Length: 216
Image 1 (cartoon, one colour):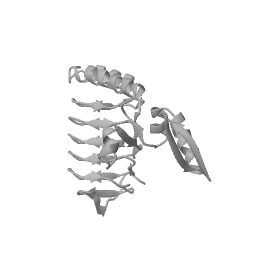
Image 2 (cartoon, helix red, strand yellow):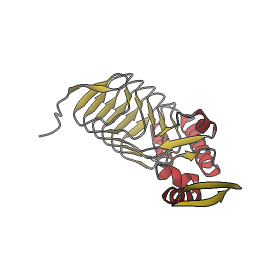
Image 3 (spheres, rainbow, N blue to C red):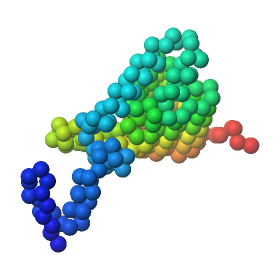
Image 4 (cartoon, rainbow, N blue to C red):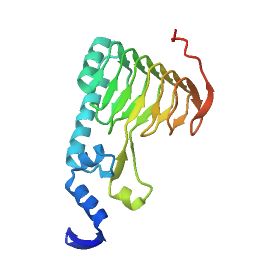
């Protein structure tokens, strides 16, 4: 069955099921589309306001004396969704939201860490991240027309316990990294990584399994 509806003075003929889905999406805000895992336009005032707040927080954090660990920690607790004990991030730190970053205990983020947390980034305990690393939850379409329309799509990233990301690592949207994982320097991780793994390369592949010597 084909339904007819009008959007922005354009008459559109579409199958009923597609029309119902399209109508729901039109009724959604761009923030709601983003949280639902749908394509959304980032040229949206609500999303721009959130990004602007993150820019202000990052500027405040990066202006703190790098030796003032207590003040840095207090600023991180204000900026991020949650922060465990003994958490430190070096300058320069950049993020897209801040409140979508959730960090456990004993975390070190080395120089020039960027976390594009359009969606949630969950980081476990005892995690170390090398310099110049990017964790991104957002990507853009292959279509140039869609990119001109400021379209994007986002998916959460999850990082387990006892993980070491080497320098210049990139973690792409939707990836889950298990417990006791080492990611070699320069790797681009575009797929999930199981527990007890050493991975490396572009794209990252399993090099070998590693022992978890913390287990009794």
